[in-house]
Image (cartoon, rainbow, N blue to C red; front, top):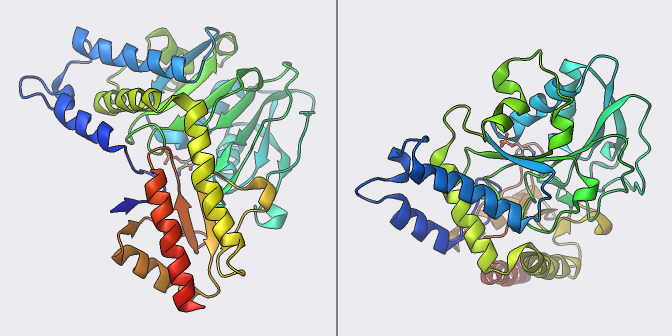
Length: 356
Ligand code: PMP
């Protein structure tokens, strides 16, 4: 089976094998360990160290393991930082950034910094340097748009007088991060970082000191920071498996190397679509195309259904587009191998030959 699920998504074979062998020791499975035990602490802090190393996270940032998915971050971020008298700027590039804005608007004043809604979210707005409104608490963007298949290639220049927050749920660990442009990054693990259940938040320590303290303790970033993400029971098995993912990623040559492989997988599929005489039509404009999610249409809804059912029969799963926009989508996260991408490439060529 070739797994192109959008998330939860494919895990590398080696990670699944290790999770089974090392996670389910008959004496003491990871799921049975106390989160206060030495055995679990090794897993917890080990995973954090591996993330720090792989993403070259500076010492001035902290890495938190939270729950509630990226969706909780949509609310937690403004609850912590959108204080009275300030406003938060959001860049709208798709449904997830709209949801992030909606939650922030329930907490305080917001504004739309830029948006590509007018062109059906086919592109990333062209911004070279951030120029936010006065009293901006922070700016928020979504680095990869899972539903529309667009991605920021590089983030705008940052002049350090306001924080930039990034929802990187669908492209974290797919490429290096320039931390001089990011103050807080969050991502649910279930695409590039492991199983669902854990959300990684990487945040500048100094900014946390400005956070709101009048909100419930469980929703304060500083609560989790002070207790090393052990304030309450963490999702231990998800964190363990995320650590295995980090080991695997290191073996692949780290994020620089995986970025090259990801670009190779995506570019061969885009090229094939561009040469398909509009049979396969990517949703994203050429300059905003995502290496993680390729969203595309076929000439008719009937053909799309036929494509999906043929693909399923040949073992290609997870290719249905998001229910909000329909069509098809290929998710090419880190664990999707070049062989899987090539096999799909060849299947798509032969499907087109038989149906156009
Ligand atoms: N942001 C982005 C970019 C996403 O792709 C998703 C999930 N597909 C979310 C946020 C929501 O994540 P969760 O389900 O972990 O809350």
